[in-house]
Length: 359
Image (cartoon, rainbow, N blue to C red; front, side, top):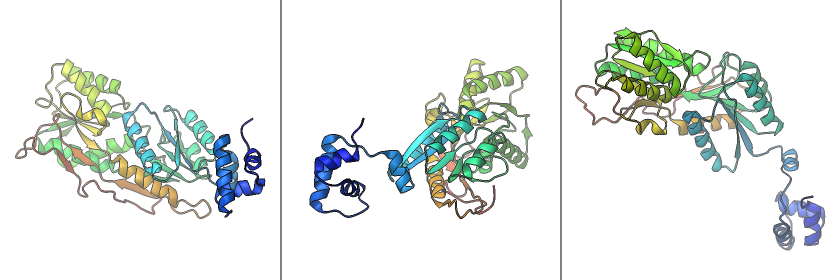
């Protein structure tokens, strides 16, 4: 058996109650007692029982997080941003992957709640099928959705302003001379897939020109390659392709290169997310940056505001994106390649849309 509080008290020559007070710090004890207890605990290798502490203090100082897949570089970025924010507070992060499966997602949420986490951050894997599990969890612990959200609301959400992001992307390629634009994204099972397609269609309609029929698969490199091959087979190619994320865009670039297409001379390509290797691919990818640090900070701020005994309307916070201009898009006349980054009207700073409005 492990070392107990009784062992520490015996070694320090004090009562169990005094040892407990000295170790918890919640009540004052004499300096001599505190020193003896601390020394005994260190020598014996005593570690407090985390479950007992949680029951006593009504907090585990842990946050649970569920993302669709940790292999997706965007989710890796957002997890790291959340963890870095938590390091400043002493709260630990428990991470789970739903593996893009609503049933697994529900089990992960149940597991985290059984561990008595103080709050949950989730990016739902399915806009509709994730609803029961997310609402069940939100009824028991503070919960905030990031990037993606469930249909019908019921919980706070923080993410990038997808509509503004697609406007930046479409306006950029049109300003560079594109007259026909295509969108390659994911099947419409998540909010991000739906909103990005809608944002593209609205931005393309405002910009004028020809909007090709969208190609929808999933947010992977493999789908990007397959979509690129489809575009090559169908012909003629559009002047520009806007992609639902960077993985699709990089897969598309590979297919176009293998097909002998020059980027951006013949086709401009724009991604979404600005993951780490977007700047390292050849040519470096023009993309829309998600401000993951701001998203993480806002998610944790909202999580701290949730009161289970005093519910309020769910909040939606959309944070401004930033267009990062690299070498897969044609330069805008009069700017050349000297303009490396441009952003939306609020310069990438956090903004609130629909605050205090049910999602």
